[in-house]
Every structure is written in structure tokens, then in C-alpha cells.
Image (spheres, rainbow, N blue to C red):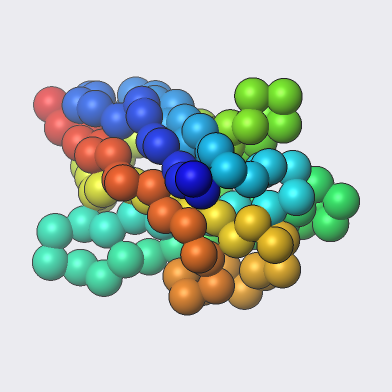
Length: 126
């Protein structure tokens, strides 16, 4: 079965850090294009960062999190990560990882991705 399972969300104080994990099964993250998205209450889902296949090697990150969030992949563990530092209250949202196992996605648009995780809540608050 092709799926993504996320973990690592939680409550953190402003300025703190979290690392979200996204474990893949049924396909290899090495060949896949990966995206992290988030959705805050009452808002549309927005892209955070995208990673192309290992052979392509491109990364995109939106300006609002650039320098604070880092997307990465561990091919041996078949897992993708989102390292989040200097968290702000406005980062509060449900975070989703998504994958295009074919590796062809690159516009960082949600419709490009076929497989989605269940989402993990991140709350940044005192």
C-alpha cells in the first residue's frame, strides 16, 4: 500500500523548534517529488517547501519560512523531514506531507501530488 505517515507535531513555545517526520511505504522517497503543506483554521492549504527527486536535486521554500524551515530526506529510512526552527504563532497549522512517486512534480502545487499524509497539528503558543 502506498502511504505516508506523519509524526512529530505538538505544542511548542514561540522561538522553539520541531522536526516533522513523514515515513513513506509502497514507494521510495529517493525517486519521488515531495512537498510539505500546511493549513491553518479558516485558511486555504498552502505550500511550504518542495523537494524534487534525488537525481534532480532541486528544492523550493516559500519566503515566509525560508531560513527557518528545512526540508530533507533520508533515503535509507525512506523518510522525509521538515525541520522547523524559530517558530512563530502564525506557523500554527495542520502540516501535511505529500508525494508524487513518479518524481515528475515540480510546480509545488497540491494537485501534482498523489499521496498525502494524514496531517499533524503544530501549535505555537505560550
